[in-house]
Image 1 (cartoon, rainbow, N blue to C red):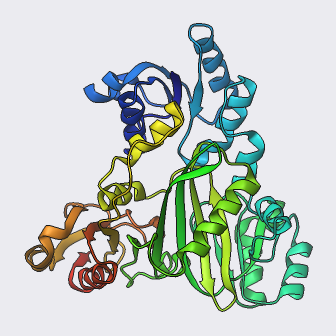
Image 2 (image 1 turned 60 degrees about the vertical axis):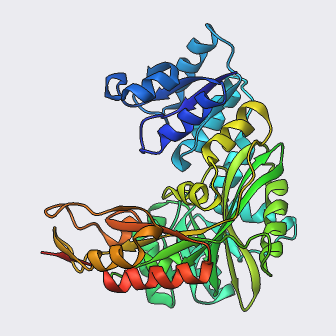
Length: 407
């Protein structure tokens, strides 16, 4: 099978998808923005052919390149795994008549108001929401639904560009800073109180073949706004045995069916609180922040190869062991600036060294990283343990013990 893969070089873990496709027997044709000479020997070996384009979201340029490839070999699949590339890839796929995620499905997985309209029609519980085109619609939504509410980009990912509004003053600020008052359409949603997590799958022809549940501590919006917090997310190894996950899994399957997702990775955010389980949003792509690495370590499997098996052969080859819970704790600098030194790492290494998967500590003199930058913007540690509750407590200890001092 000949598979075009969009952007094999960046971000760093993109190479893992190329490796996996090569491993299961695909001829991988890369299209990306970076020069071939920048690739290491392994990436060059895994690629059957590579074409550079000015931008992988320049649909005209990529479409021309894909058609050039199609004049030489039959292209069986065209795959993209980065959120910002998904819509362009779907349009190019359709223009070149290549199987894969449709434009309609890609749109519904990108545009939050349209997504939620479809899911409400399928009786899937989700927050009240609109796609606001002007300030009058925003104020009307606030009058009808009350506060708190959330304003965010229609096609955003994570907490980027997201505002929580608790009153008229907050909404006025969000209207101004989001660009709504200058004509930019935004998503406005009821704020859902409760614990936040995500449910990820690999699907084949719409059926779930692998599934994982992960929890945020604290919720993302708080984590990305508060410097002193060392935020975590943990994937559980109890998804098949603990009470409560059946409801999450059942909702995830209904969402996948309603949106027409076929053979793909998926990443679905959810909330559970006083109003019960509520759908938040979904992407037809793997989760970010290298979360798949946690699934691989926790389940003793090569999840990238499982994705490639789904794409190339339409079947699964490995079973998740559920042996370990796995998680990451982000370690924020105590202020903006540059990193001066670290404290507490020796103690953590002594106590928990055998549980550490990997870690990242930028050298002194490096930028301290911003709070809004996310879980891997600065220092971090990833760990695993057979007991989920034990791991959560250990990550709490790491967050309290390791200090990143900046100047």
